[in-house]
Each structure stands twice: as structure tokens, then as C-alpha cells.
Image 1 (cartoon, helix red, strand yellow):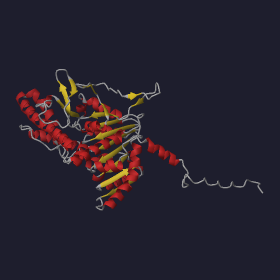
Image 2: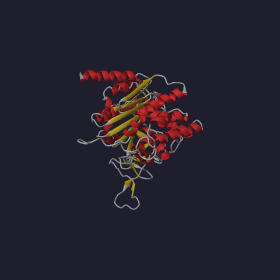
Image 3: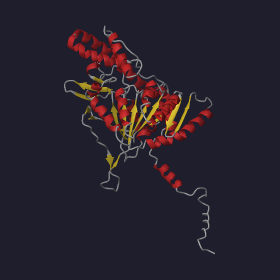
Image 4: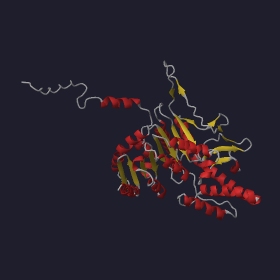
Length: 451
């Protein structure tokens, strides 16, 4: 009977997720296809959904451990507001006799991960695997393939930098301001936690520096594994140095500073470089949206640039430094009272999905999914979870960054005044005005034996 009820619940959720817009938070849910064109009707619909979603997210965001997982959809959403396109993931050609074999291997990997058609990340993964083998048996073929990978990877880096520069400039001043404002408000909605709680931990599979860019504008301080000022170096040991100050007049009771987050880039970053001589990873100071001919951008990035496209097998995630990065992700998510919020993540990476499913085996954890659409990958993932532990905000309405920030995310501030006002109103009598005299208490009921 229990199994039948679970199957029925999954079927009902799957049917609702077939709608273009769908939300499920706590005991409330809603689904519809087309948004009303009349502004008043749209406002009414948004207000009706907001009264359930915003209080729920406000409570969820104050969990003991809060984590945010951002995928490529995050950059796409900010770019949309700025009026520019995001980096494309279309397939490329390496110009070798092995291109057909690389494409076949990439497609087989994408199919095994249930991600549909292969993209440039799958091709890079397959090409890099082939490059290792050719280094053993055919040096000439290895050089040809390496040149092809260098060319396409340089183009990929250039595309990332072009996306960054487009977001900085914007299509016009109003688009630029809208994108910048939504980006700051989005990050602050998550980062605005009481200083006594653990810091927000942001994880991303993106290679761009949009999160760092937004934190600079919002005044958020970032803690990651890189240590140093001029040439920050990646440290294998988890450095959890935090910043605090002593309140005036209090000794021995430090308070943690507000506006501090932790950041982990699971697939690396375009400004991470590997020094083969010293065998260390460091971060170069490449400006956000730098031109393609910037002196710190290598012409042959295969040997130096630390971007790691889409690991598909467990053995690949044990390579340095990705073992440390994924251990951080698992340690942050898989513990009691932890919350992970995903935005723009397509659930196409098995190594990430596995951590999320492991997290949900702990009854006190929760997952909030914000996505543009419910494709087969997302539906397959949700079917493996328990409804009570997963909140869903699906559809273009909810994934639009301006709509999400303006209507559904908690207010991006630690507003103690509003909180105190709410507490005062809660403890006040109901209808009588403060200026009215208090009503006389009702007469006491007669006691037993009274005349």
C-alpha cells in the first residue's frame, strides 16, 4: 500500500511538472501553462503564489547549513537581463582523423549520464582521454590533436570572456543596471544570514567569474581554498579562516562579520592555472571580461588552464584538485539540517546528482530546485526523492531573475527592525487601538455554592 501511494504521488507530481510553470513548497503547490497577459491578472497570480513561496523560502534559508548550487543557467539568466547571450555549448571539430571517434565517445558518455545530445564539455573530456593514449603510442598524432584542443579551448575561453564583457557593458544602460541589481539582490538574499549561523557556501559548475563579480558589487567577502595576495595558491588543506570583530564594550565575545561567503568552483575556473615546474595551482588576476589578447591568457591552454569539463567516471573526480573540491561539496551537503538550493543547474552531472541524492537520505535535509523547465533529467532525479524534502520552482516565470528576486526570494537584508515590529504586533491585543481604554474584563463565573 505504501509503495502504491508513493507511485501515485510521483505520478501526480510528474503530471504537474508537465505544465510550463509549477511550484511546490511545503503543503502548497500550483501549476499552469500560460501566464495571463493582463497585468492585473498576472499580479494577482504572482501575489497568490508569493504568499506561499516567500515565507517558505525565508524559513528554509535560515537553516543551520545553507548551500547554493549554480549552473550555466545562472549566467544565462544574468546575460538575458543584460541583453547579451551566454557562452554556447555547441559541439566543435578538432580537425583530426579522430574527430568521429571523439564524437562517438562523447555521445556515449552523454547518453550514459542521460543528458541527451553531447556538447563541447563531453568532447573535451573525450579528446583529453584520447590525448593521454596517443602520448604513449603516437607522438605525431598526439601533437596534431593537442593543437586542435588548444585551438578549441582558446575559443571557449574567448567566448567566456566575451560573455563577461557583455554583462559588464550591457545592451544599454538600463539593461546593465537591471542585470547588476538583480545579480546583487540574488546573492544577498542567500548571503544575508545571521552572523551566528554558518556561512553560505556557494558551489558552481561554471568556469566564468560572474559570482565573484557580483560579490564585488555587493560587498561580499569570499573565502575559498586560494591563499595569497599577489599570486593566490590553491591549498589542499581546508583553510576556514573567518573574520570577526569585537563589539565595543565587550571583551572575549567576538562576533562574526556579516557579508562573508564560501565559494567552491567544482569544475575549475578560467583564471586557474597549473604550474608544471612547481606542481601547484594558482589564480591569475585576469580582469572580468578581459579582451582575448590579454597577456595572462595562454595561447596553448591545454597544459596550463585548469578547467575540467564534465567528469563522468568516479576515477576522474579523484584527480587533483577535484577530489578536494568534491569532498567540500559532499561535506557541506551531506549533514543534518543542511539545505541545498539549485538555480540554473540541469542535473546532467552524475557526480553532482549522486551527492544530492546521498544528502536526501538524511531526513532533516532539504533541496530547493529552481529551473527553467522540467526536462527528462530533472523528472528522473525528482522521482528518486521524497516529496517532503524537495521544493520546486519550475518554469520561465520563476527562473526569471528579476521576477524571482522581486517576488519570491526573501528580502536581501538582515532587517531586525521589521522582525521586532512583528514580534510586538504578535503580542499585542487584536482590534482595540492603542489610544482606546482597555476593555473591562468579563465577570468571573459564579463559584460552586454561591447564592
